[in-house]
Length: 351
Image (cartoon, rainbow, N blue to C red; front, top):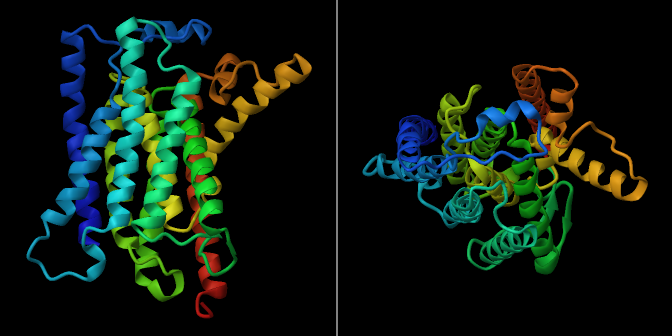
């Protein structure tokens, strides 16, 4: 528990103190966010706001995770707190996704237009990342290949290596894009992500305390990764809250999505992820529905997609949309933890 608190606290401080450095550096070099022309007109005033704040988020995650281990050097600990392959792989997924987002952000700001990587290139790179993560999880960290809701042994459908690799690709690409779509209002994605990662912290610690039931041998180390992500998102939110002093950009959005995907896959929570990240799923589905409806029926379901822009154009103030969406994220946290604990109460002793 001390290690978890240390990971979260250090990452929060690094993110909180690192964001102003990024803000000043981008102001000096004239780097700022480019705003999409077809977006809500109220967003035009945000043009020029420093972006790529995800650099600070990722740096905070790495520092928080490593410090949680190095800071406890020499203290007698349980085996669950050692650096594990699963923990390293989860952090690597965060860094890898952030690198793709950084490339996209840099192309956008260097060309001074709201167009970064081509969609096919971005999807292709995310797919490569997902497949690399999947192969490493299978052959390096020894992942369980069951399709799982709350634990692999109830219920658990054996996917095999190729089936699990396909699942990893779907989860990684889907989650990163869903978070990216949600990052459209000040503090919306970072606040909602804090709820989701806090859920993974609690579940990871619970899995560690009941190892015989869940069989996730590296769960405590994964809880450290989740705590570092939750802390970094919280610290970043201080500067990202409306009116935002800095945006996370694709660098942060893809990193957050990569972290969620990696944690859910390694904790055997693939089918619970849509509940944990329910807000991101809802926003992502709004984009899919809008595209399909327009292409098939030449009609739009929403005033504008993603979903938060629909409510903006409906007259909701931005802060109202953000707070109400945060409430939805909190409900998803409570629901997912309730489902997880209900399974433990019903089947835990039998597991």
